[in-house]
Image (cartoon, rainbow, N blue to C red; front, side, top):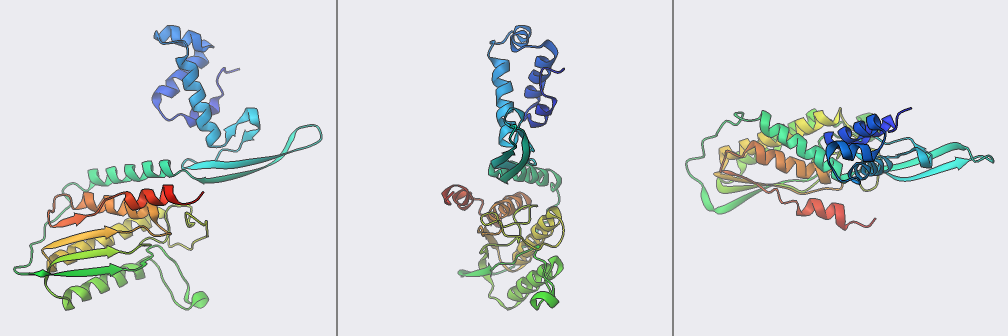
Length: 290
């Protein structure tokens, strides 16, 4: 019989934790592991307990009849277990919520991947010959909801990713044609650029179900590339473009991700300034009532 529960390896965050658990399993005690590694005798047990705490946060603690872990990126909010007259567990209700820190880690990983894969992808655009330095053009985006899916027979109007993309392109093109040749343009996303904040397809705060058009990765990619096209179109009209993405109740994390991705995409273009301030993002996470 193994000394360490094999399922605990699923909840290790680092290779070091897996190594220590493997040694405990092989040698049979934390003291033996510490002796082999020349470490303090408490080190192996501290690491084992840390992994057990992580497992419990995800819903796995057999000693407490918690054997239904939630997926990575989620945390257990509460567990209700029903016992029969003999004290045996007969049913269990597990409530979970999104692990905000884990979601941020995933977002940062995605941004780093975009930075790596988009090197050399930027194609500079020549600035316009003359602009009015006394004017500022503001291009507001109110609730674009990229990823929303509606059916006209149900709600009176069709809407999907393709429609959202085309409407956005048409609006920015029209403003570039009819607007003044100001030196600076402010592309102002007022919030809810994305309809869903993650693959759960629920609003983060209220948990309302959302109708979405496709997979989360597809929606994120289409939304990002649509914003890139809008920025490039504005660069044809203005010498400087400022981008500000405000969080919405549908996309508080995605808004932050969008700014980071745009900043990476246009990092070699001094004419583009993307506001990547995390203040609004962290306000949503920490200042809302529990």
